Amino acid sequence: MRQRAISAALFVPILLVVLAIAGPVLAAFVILITALAAVEVFRLLRTAGYQTLAALGTALAVVIVLDAAFPDVLEGSGSLLVAVGVVLVAVAAFTKIEPRDGLNAWSATVFGAVYVSMLGFILRLGHAAPSVPDTAPLASLGAERGWIVLLIFAVWSYDTGAYLVGKQFGREKFLTHISPSKTYAGLIGGVLAATVVTAVMLWGLGQSPVHAVILGPLAALAAQAGDLAESLIKRAAGQKDSGTLIPGHGGILDRVDSFLFAAPIVTLYVVALIR
Image (cartoon, rainbow, N blue to C red; front, side, top):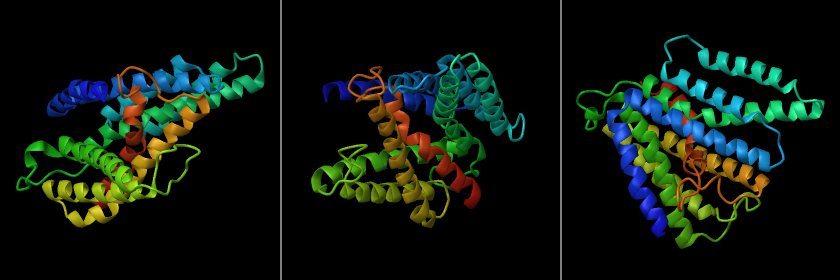
């Protein structure tokens, strides 16, 4: 717990400064986190028995997120980059003498790159989300910071609610073959916490809190799915943590796994249904 407290005291202020500045600094921060997460996921995949082209996969992930920082350069560029990445990784996989090894490396590398590059949706949310009315309580945050803060708070509130309620009332567990500590009580507590926090944030951004009835559970369940997805990879690799970069917390991937799934889901809902 002491290590966790020290790590939080160091990294939370950094995150707050990055969010306060936003813009290119936020983009650079997300790109750095993506690169570090890519190193960890490719290490896990190798440990799990998959061959990877880690350098190429990491570069692909970084380029996809870099593109998310400049969404107006070319329409549909994200899909185009993924397609080009699939081609380039396939060509690199041709160097494997055994075709099964080549297919293994091709599929694992593309998976790892696309998986961690979903952090880019944090940046896409900031660019694509609707503007914040001047009369809104949180108008000073602006659209980019405001909607990203909503995403962060929704995920954090789910994690906090799930932990506290699960610890107090958790009895029945689910998906224990992936993660032995997840309980139905924790799931319900986390969803409720995320829904309440999302409602408050929507109100603060000048939007109807009614959206939280759907957006809150969607963000919460996506965050839980992201956590379980990373646990699946770690279980396959026989590892407890994705790395040791953050004392008491594991690796970078352990800290951002929920955002990998929550960011695209929240972005889709906000862009499609909130004006």
